[in-house]
Length: 120
Length: 250
Image (cartoon, rainbow over all chains, first blue to last red; front, side):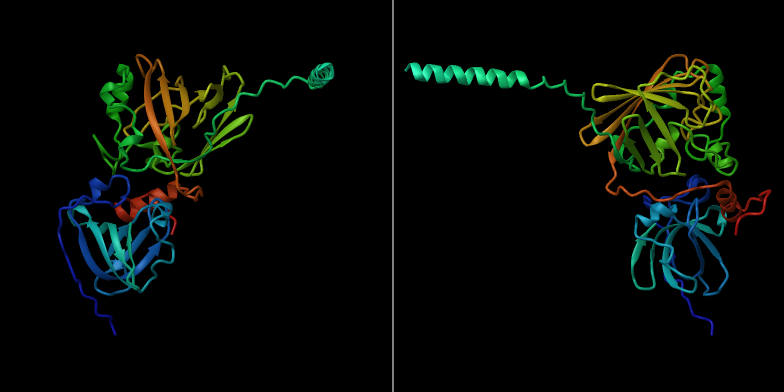
């Protein structure tokens, strides 16, 4: 049975981001907006230049939104490890969305399955 | 009374003889300050300094034209998707001093003959050979040929032999293979200061100086953070939807 996942919040906020985004963030993400959704993790790749988090807001198994975090050592300093999340976890993630409707984003923070809030 | 005078005289003679038998102490070697440790320029920290604004750097006409033709990944004239930044386009080493402007840490290790600067980013490093003459015909390298000597509490580093394809910073500030840096590295309280003078007749009409401050890193451990062209191509295909000319690493 397909897991029922709800988008619990879709908010647009003016914000001063603390996210450590990839080079060129301003040209590919709307850094003035934050979106928060609950979604299923489809992939979590501990790689350079930036760790990748694939999610499916509809609860599926394929990546519908591809999000980037900081570089591995930077987010490790903020409490993340390669085992922080795994495929199938349901997480609440806040991110700056891609410009021009691109299905990408840069993570600001995430609440893990056990309720831990981590900033990226 | 006479007995007391004799006793005092004997004591004085014995003391003098004892003093003569001790070799004179050698002058103490000059103690150099300890620059070792892990250092960082925290992101957003206003105290750590930057290279000067472009308008304050005395660029030659050719260097200015080269700068204007570049497309950095961020800031003024940014074009992330089509950047000419060699550290992104080709994942080239940052070169010096750009790598020290990166927000990751570096570690300084001091020995009697060398000072080693170990950057966490890409595990790049350079050695500063102490008390030797600069090579008049150095190899052309990413991180140059650096020699150093102590001037009181300051380590003075002279370096040449820099590959001209690197940018001096993320704005695209150019240089030629004639770049000559003189750095004065010294402690300022708990921090470490690098006063860097840039000389390069092909790029600058006169020498200019930058002042950078590094703060002690609370965590002395160094992590691996190696970034390669396959990492960049993967990112570009996945996040920018760009076609890449080699299969990306999965």
